[in-house]
Image (tube, rainbow, N blue to C red; front, side, top):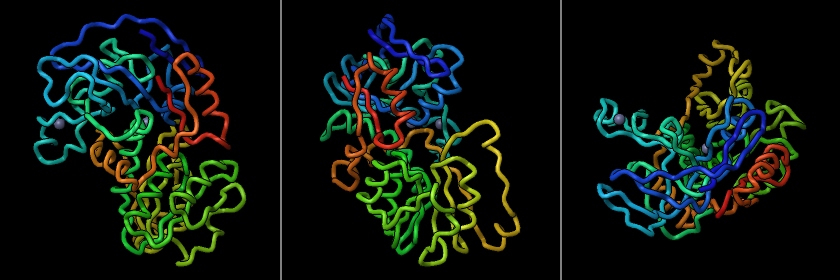
Amino acid sequence: MKAAFVKSPFQFEVRNVPLRDITPDEVLVKIKACGVCGTDLHTARTEAKEFQPFGHEIAGIAEKVGANVKGIKEGDPVLIESGSYCGECELCRNGRADLCNKAPNVFTRVDEGLTMGFAEYLIAYRQNVVPFDGMSFETASLVEPMGVALDLAYTTKPELNDDVLVIGLGPIGLMALRMARLMGARRVFGAARSASKARIEMARKFGADDIIFTDKMELTEYKFPRGGVDKIMVTAPPRTIQDAIKVANIGGVIGFLGIEYGEGANITFDANYFHFRKLQLRASYAAPALWFPRCVELIKSGAIDAGALITHRFGIDDIAAAIKMVAEDKSSVIKAVMVD
Ligand SMILES: [Zn+2]
Ligand SMILES: [Zn+2]
């Protein structure tokens, strides 16, 4: 089968690789769609020292099902949890499956010689396979990142009558913005660079009352109706947390999600101000990947039009050009998905 590999900076190879037999606890999935994520760009820029498999927003068809696998049969449309929980460790038994990362995940399976989502097939451990129906494969590939957005929303907890700000309007920020609206926010603001035209238009469609162009004005200069905002979801580099702290209302909550290694990972802020304003800064990290059935329902009910985020589609042979485009085209790309 074909599988794509990445090495930094921005080198890609599509190779023919052997596909081994599945064990009784595994499912062979014919990959029908795999989304390009910000994490893939990060891997392509700096992370991958050697050529390595990638792609973790996966939807496909169960082609072969191991003898021990229950609830999935051959031909079923399935999603892949990028990481699952084990159900057996202390954290799981204490009701904190959300903190468990002991189950197999798509990333660590590479250590066993397996490939990931940018390939024709995936050998998945049974725990990672979730059946779905009622939507196209490409739309279904948005369930994994939607779980990430839901983790950010549940971490930050926008409530009825809150004014909410979302900083960074990539696919995760856009879905989190929509969730804030659905969770009862009074007003929802987005902050992004003015060049992100498609994303800004989508933010308005998803219910943003106004967009603040961060290349045109400081966040702190914007005249928020309540002086500031009650809840802030940050899907932008860590330095934006400093601005978030300044525009949070007293008692405000800031949720942060993102990776930026190197110097950018270290920020400073005024702890006295933080204290007297009774602010909270919370980390969101959607590993294990929870909420798949809920995200499927949110899409099927029409509550979140995830499919609308897909602006670009490509085949596996064009992966190098597709990922370069995602990295460079700030204006028209929201989500690019590899489709079979
Ligand atoms: Zn991702
Ligand atoms: Zn566990």
